[in-house]
Picture 1 (cartoon, rainbow, N blue to C red):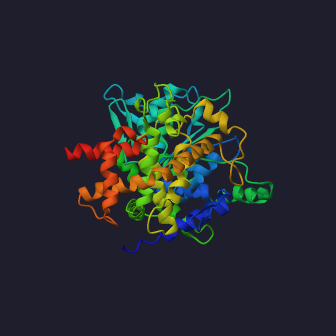
Picture 2: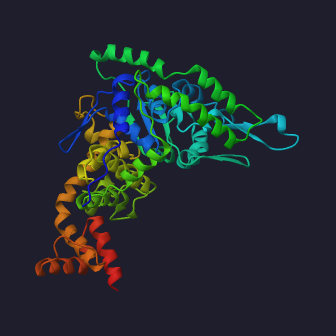
Picture 3: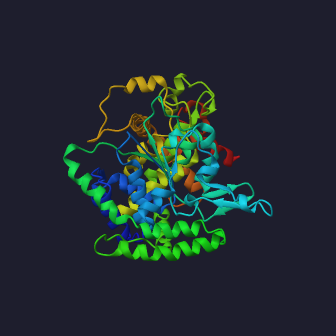
Length: 468
């Protein structure tokens, strides 16, 4: 195996800078025998580098939106106050015209021209209190959040996929609930909250430090460019980028010490992350999660409009704990991609099951709708970690904990089937099957109805189909 590419030092330095000086983030995670400091900052930084979307939840007043603006400012190289002015404010009365674009009424007599609002021009889009938007307003943002493509009437603004960072308070009577399609558009979610009374002075210092990220003059210049009706979008983007160069130099100086990745460096980091391979066990465990959450013995595919399968064959499967399945976004663009990101930051040569497990609460917590019985079973249970977990995160970790137990039960047969499958497709295997192991494989293939686990069934079904 070739030596993995080293982590870009500027990315590590920026994460440490943000977590110590601008958004006090003492949370740590141990993966294998290595520690990741500034855990929430790390996840937000990965979201920026990978052009993925992150949802920050928590009680009011615990710096959710500040965290989003600090990360966006330091990593993208635009002033904090520019993001502050350009953020989309969640409000029941918001319209697309007040959030992102409106008609240029001065041109209506000759053409239908669109004026894009400031949020569309920046490399990170921030939506504050998204859960205050009713379902219909959330619908209007779905495609934009997924693709980064802004479309209004006959006009389109597209600069490539960009990260969206949204905040939401924990649900109460005054908040709307994020609709399931919107939740699924966010690769991860994390919590910003109380970190301890002993950090009071650190938080106060961080609030003062944020002033260093402000640049009123540059913010005014960029807004002037955005509002200039004589220039088209490409020309505006070019001028904005030119104005930004001075701010990037300011961030690099000794007083701040931030190191903004160039677009070429960011793409190189993306490639290094995406190229990080999964260890065989990690790949199979990811398939286990996918299969158990999306399959039921009684109904086949897991569907949110079907009853929960309570048959004997389903009782140990994760699909009995949840009302809905999970999309490929959850498996591929959340768990798998971010686990690769963690391996990259730790300079681990392969993604292991530990990297995947670290991402479970963040990739699945906001997506899974657990059954009432499963929620009641775990109500009142102590949640791990110095700050605990949100109920959603904890329940997701318990669901996957059950999958991990099932993995131990079916691993022997699964390994045999996978080895046989690889050999049939002329893929390299660590150890060819013995005569006794081959006999077990043939027994499984001949008796698919005696197998309960959906991933075993899937391999058997696929192999039998290919053997015909």
